Image 1 (tube, rainbow, N blue to C red):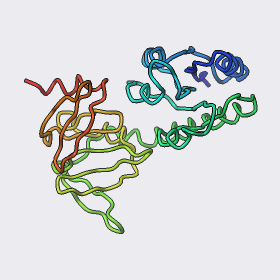
Image 2 (image 1 turned 90 degrees about the horizontal axis):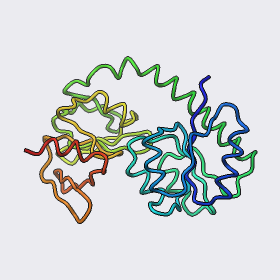
Image 3 (image 1 turned 90 degrees about the vertical axis):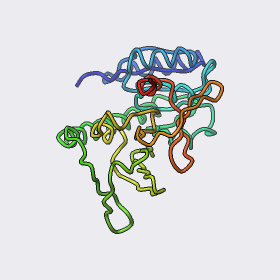
Length: 244
């Protein structure tokens, strides 16, 4: 098995050194790098593309949430923190684990074992879905609505929103449907000329864009039903391609 690349983002030098030393005790993993602040973390995550990230939310420069909001590569996440204040939000970001400092070897081993189990399941599911992901979705799709499946036209879909491992599908008539398929899998099967990713959590139908406006430093897309979506920094080039 190829070794798993790990990146540590933690401003605490003592804890960062301890985590680094402990990771080297596990032969299935190798340390790709260490970051001391959010600016370094954002740069190294995109450059090194680690498979697993240990991150402290309280990073100077950019906090952990800002870093995760703006990365173009999103690794598996294990949060490290002084207390449990951010635990709920961490798991909303699909964290595999949330560890309190100081980290013990036994606790780190538990976290790494969680990652390996998650990795194995992901690989199995990836192989199973490969053939499905190669085919583009038809113009009409079936979505769950209570105990029945409704047929809706992709033309009426205004946007998709990620919700952990699920995806919400929103339509122009204010309909909302929950799919058990992840947003990345859906993205691979969409017509790229009609649907574009503008955020880690959002895919929009370009035919339903009403306005594009800037609020100080952020860019927003307005869709039907008074929906406003912030365009992620790394996705701005996709929007600019629509401007003549």
